Amino acid sequence: MDYLLTIPSSFILLISLINFLTIRTPDKSSQVQESISVIVPLRNEANNVGELVASLKDQENLTHVEFLLLDDNSEDDTLALLQQHVSGLPNFQILSGTTLPQGWIGKTWALQQLFDKSSGEIIVSVDADVRLAPDAISKSVTLLKNAQLDFLSPYPKQVALSWSEKLIQPLLQWSWMSTVILRVAEKSSLASTVVANGQFFVVRKAALDQVSGYDSVRNKVLDDVELARSLVKNGSHGCVANGATIASTRMYSSWVEIQAGYGKSLHAAFGSVFGSAIAIIFVFLTGIAPLIAGITGSYLGWYALAAVTLTRAMSAIKVGKSGLDAFLHPLSSAVLIYLIIYSWMMRGQVQWKGRTL
Image (cartoon, rainbow, N blue to C red; front, top):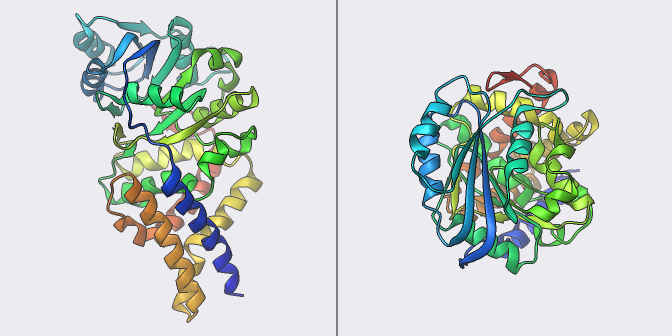
């Protein structure tokens, strides 16, 4: 029966190779004539304000741009620091978030308020912990136009410094690099094939208008993927791109943050208990079972493990990393399975930025 382990490993190896060779990369910059609205929601982001504003004000090749930053009732010095760093900067505006209405969650309500105030033909949403290269927005918009897309999600390089980060964070990119043929998905009308990341998201305002802004994801914890699915259902097309050379972020900095962050969202990523069970089985078959089979004497088990490790290495190399973390894949898989189960156990109880999700 060990040969069964070679089926999923060979499958994801093939998909990984296709994506490694064909994934879109924002690598051409041009002077952008369309009006751009850069929107940034912030809640308790005092540690990020200075570097965030610095990276935004350095954006190049944007003829008409506005930067809208919304303080979402922060409990730290976010607002004061925003006022300090934005003072005197043209095209920057600070908004104060209103009370969270019934049926919305914090981030989507903040994004909706920003969208309502925006005037650009293209909306660029950026998380506060993302750092952009000076040509990040112009390159992304240029690719959006050249590829004739309605939305583009340039995936930032994920900075991982602690061991817990190195175990989990690379799985984010690997999960879609190894399971979805991206160039096929961008032309598909099936919402189930959608891949997106909200850390850095570029979308035509006309497309966002068709789904009433962020209203369709008002109560969605996984708002980025759900927004992309809503856009595709309404006839838009878009994709994830390799944004490692133009953007970076350190999403979490400790195990406590990782557990809380994935605890609030992983249950939503797979849609249902059944979907999560399928995900756990897949992770086990591709990450843990091959090692067990190999240790117990199966050459096919070692083949399956080598194939999956290679997919992890390709995913890392594509974004300029060494790929050594790939050899920890069985351990990463075990931790991911724990986080999926933890997310279901803690659904509706996780504290994130002072709010319960």
